[in-house]
Image (cartoon, rainbow, N blue to C red):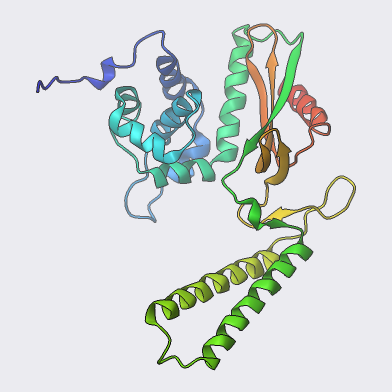
Length: 277
């Protein structure tokens, strides 16, 4: 085995995507919206520098990698990610928390980059191409339904719990096999947790309505997502809409919507482009 020393600052080569990414984040972008998370004296250990987290998240997304666990692994094994993160090796939960708590701040960075591209003459504003696609969310469609459907689901779960408890009372527990008893107790615990989850959701979330004013399905795990049909079956997810300028194919607008139909999404995409420029 041969040990070779590595200088991380020499791994980010000029002209590469990672070099441009690091330069933009370190030198050009206004990251003040992240400061409240970074300068935090209440939680003990200092937070990770948001610049490092931004670099590895955007770099990973540019390669089609969105899993926080995979990004953590890259920071341990990939020399480019080790260099971008200054070899800090953040835990996947830190990466996931950074993404989930910073959507507005990250969206602001997108706007800054678009305006920077415009100042550099990379956006012609003569023609935009707009398209959409279905994106799965990290939420089970089994937890979807209107409020009325979720109430029925909870009632069904509660009835199942009562039946199991009634059977326990009728049987001689001394003769019941221990492993069977343990399995049923675990199932009761699981069902009760599911019932509480639905009850809490119904008490805290308002009914979602569609454009027609009728109630639409909510999702307990991710209430902003929607149940939608795709060529690969029904998924719980989002419709992603992006717009690119015709001159250099710079993406000038990108947003995810919690609905399956795309015909209502053209107008907000155009309005957002208009507001940007």
